[in-house]
Image (cartoon, rainbow, N blue to C red; front, side):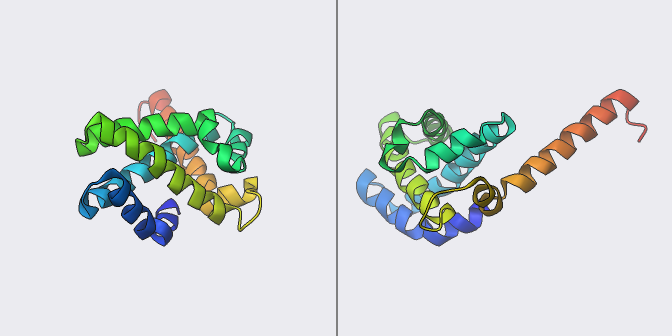
Length: 153
């Protein structure tokens, strides 16, 4: 689901990143999958930890989103991933992780809230976190059963 949302605004974000960071458009395009991965990982960590209210607070905080600790964690992960996966220098990764992530999360917030407040059901439905969490739980249970039964089932 997150990939479909990224497709809807990706061109705008790529152009903004290329312009503000002074990097080629092709390199800016490579940033989007890393951003998507970082956001999804950060949100799933919060959902599995039971902090859906924290995610809602982040998305509904408007211009204060950058001060949210969940946003900060995702930003740090995004910056680190850009350096390790794309080989971007620290200064460029730091710059992109700041304005790029704020841009992306602002667009996500607008889509998730349909112009209003982001709700738990809207968040789970539009980001597909409910299904992702269910699949994750099934995998964990399946792995535990394999461990317990020695793979007999």
